[in-house]
Structures are given as C-alpha cells and as structure tokens.
Image (tube, rainbow, N blue to C red; front, side):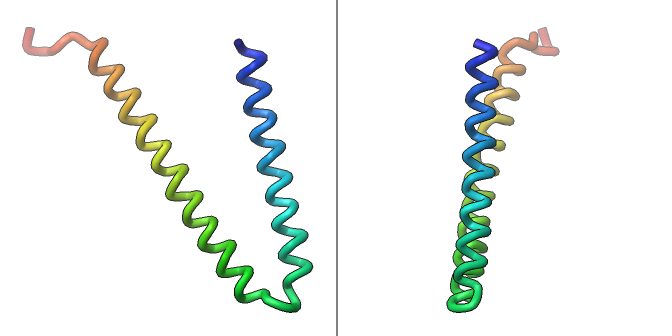
Length: 77
C-alpha cells in the first residue's frame, strides 16, 4: 500500500515536471511569433488549475472536518 502511494506521487511529480518542461520549450519556440497569445493561454490555464486544486483542497477540508465531527462526542451530552 505504501509503495503504491509513493509510486503515484512520483508519477504525478514526473508528469508535472514533463509538462512544465514541454510548456517552457513551447514558449521559447513560440516566443517570437505569438508570445502574447501564448502567455495569455498559459495565464488562463494556470488560473483554471488553481481553481481546480482549490476545489479539491476545500473538499478535503470538509471531508476531514465531517469525519472529525462524527468521531467527537457532543459537548452537551
């Protein structure tokens, strides 16, 4: 179980590094032609990914809070 979790994290990090490298190479190649358009695209994609990551973070917080509240005895009893 631990090995699987580590493998998933390593694969995700490797994919992230590969995508950032590909975006950097594409940005350098397109810099002379369509730099403004490409920069705008990267900005939009960055904002959308931040929104998605934030959504997952809030969901994780509420799941943890709900689990914690279920396991805690009420103070009024």
